[in-house]
Image (cartoon, rainbow, N blue to C red):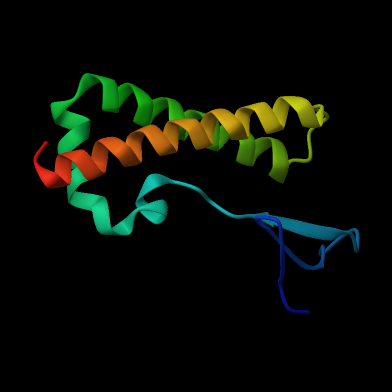
Length: 105
């Protein structure tokens, strides 16, 4: 069976032992989100303490959201949505910093 993408998730075929559908979570690390900024990401991580903290927090949130979704752990939708909103906010802030860094601002 093929994979069907639904709202950021991909659903594969039945699981090997249970026959249940297996959810494959799309990964959101910055290197995949902004491949054109790889050098700038590395540069800002070392040059800007603020960017470094935001980078770490973004990846910590990403790992936690992916873990909750992959393991289908009991957590209310409000909690996951707030984590995702925080992750988007961090990504937006870091993107602005990357663009400014690229322009030499």
